[in-house]
Length: 202
Image 1 (cartoon, one colour):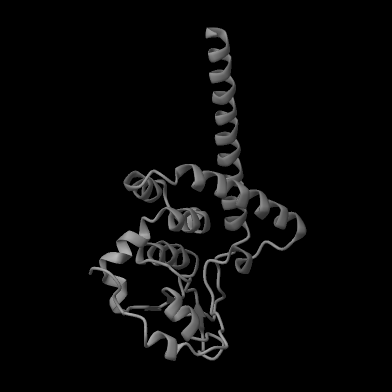
Image 2 (tube, rainbow, N blue to C red):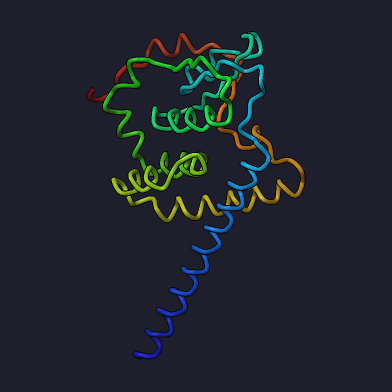
């Protein structure tokens, strides 16, 4: 029985080590490709970027605003807008104007809860980990470590898919999907009139 337990522990320990090495290598490869292909460069004519959540993602059409790129992403908290801005400025020194979305809900307590929500952490860290440093990732997972397994497996799956797209020649900034203008052909004003602005506590 003792040998069985030892062998089982060795097997699962080895599998975990192999997975972590594969995760590290694929993450490094994806990040290196992004850097080497300058995928975060927006073009020398882009001097203004728009950052924020779905409010600016769906409201500001950068095709009709000169020299502007809308890099908003639905459900982005300010932390993710910050890391995105930091890396975009590093690759685009010509940017001199930043439009940052603001509404009352952005400063509500519910935003902190949303930032640390299990599903949100998995989704957002999978999307933005290559823009973040290890301290920022460790800080979030240190506060809420529960989704750690989901974060690692989701990132690994996404890395494999990204490397396949590299081979197909489809690995672009659009593929990374870290922000864009999203056109919606609908009007939800009538519905929203029935939705409380601040559900729950502030």
